[in-house]
Length: 149
View 1 (cartoon, rainbow, N blue to C red):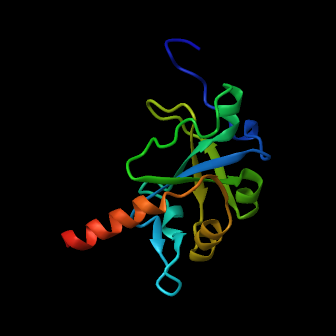
View 2: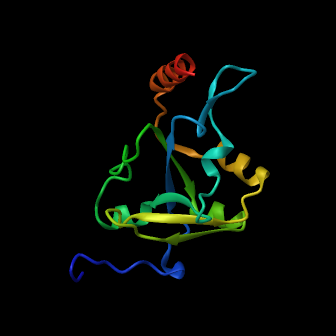
View 3: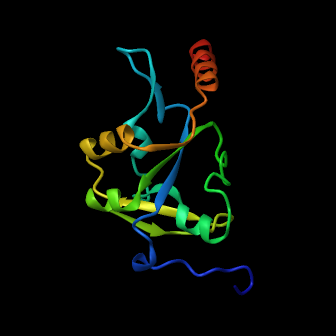
């Protein structure tokens, strides 16, 4: 490490047996199902941003630094839960995972590829829960937004 800079992993250095970690936020990423009235992760949680990236943290890097995999949670406003996907599973869906560190977060990664509606729904339905969802906060935010609008 020089001047606080750490080298990013190359694609071929990313361990497919490890996981990506995605923070799920209140709003369009965590919604109440209209039919069942149960809370669920929305496919919108896996819609890429304007840069074409779904932001995640990389388990491999956290473990290499002897940090708990949920060490960065809740690093985002309105964070309600933390989910994981195996990198091998993402790659089997023709998605790529890269290490894209950002200022203040060496562990940041990016999922890129073609996010079809079916792919986003599959990711929203099939994940491992790392930090359980805070449905009480989700309910409070939903009630608050309904009274404001």
